[in-house]
Amino acid sequence: MKGQTKAAKKKEIEVKWHLIDVQGLMLGRVASGIAKILTGKHKTNFSFNQNCGDKVVAINVSKIALSGGKEKKKIYFRHTGFMGGLKKESYEKLTLKKPEEALRKAVKGMLPVNKLRKERLNNLYLYRSDKHPHTNIISK
Image (cartoon, rainbow, N blue to C red):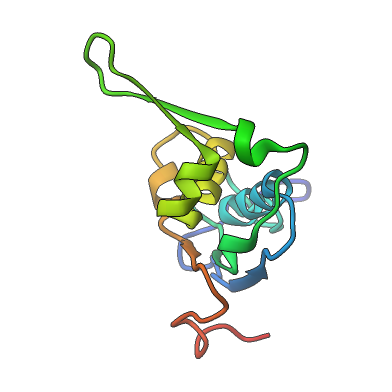
């Protein structure tokens, strides 16, 4: 059976915890790295049809950086589904209410749109400061 690819079974998938301090790092670069870890593309037993990704804890999310004056220029759009229901929110206003939501939206946009997307996003834990409840789980 030389040269055959073996699909990973659910029992064989080992889930690790990753702690990422995003203070001073660029939003897009951090989001793409987190998306890669959540999908499990960094593992040798990666498969598209299973959630073989790891869990990610990101700390100091309120201190993440944007380049080129995007703090004022960047706008997030959503639609209510009704006529004239286009809602706009700037990055500045979004971070005043929920600083972690900008990183969550960036990671969500970089994940593939399929049935595993919600499951992978549930493995992402974002915290505004460096204090988090996962200290006993994460090994450095």
